[in-house]
Length: 92
Image (tube, rainbow, N blue to C red; front, side):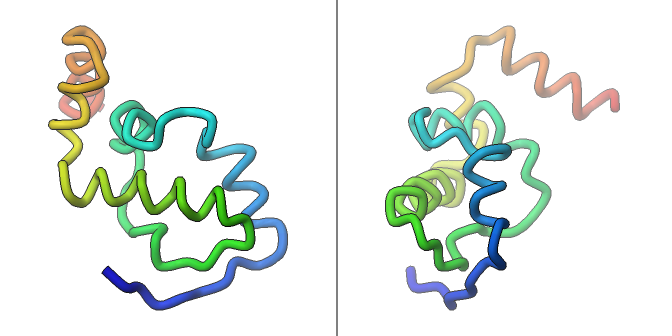
């Protein structure tokens, strides 16, 4: 899937790499553990200066789009972790 390219302003990409995404983690596992916190949007539409980061972002969002969050939960999270996430959203 081809997305329109948008460049981040200086500092935005760095903040994402340092504060939001952990590219040392498997992108599918990251999405399983933290993807439920993404409200909307698809980070694949942006162009990144760091190619390794861009590849990681694409893998993470491809997993979310193609596999779905619950399938990722089942693969990477324990039953207890899944239950905690569900409770968090059922009882805010």
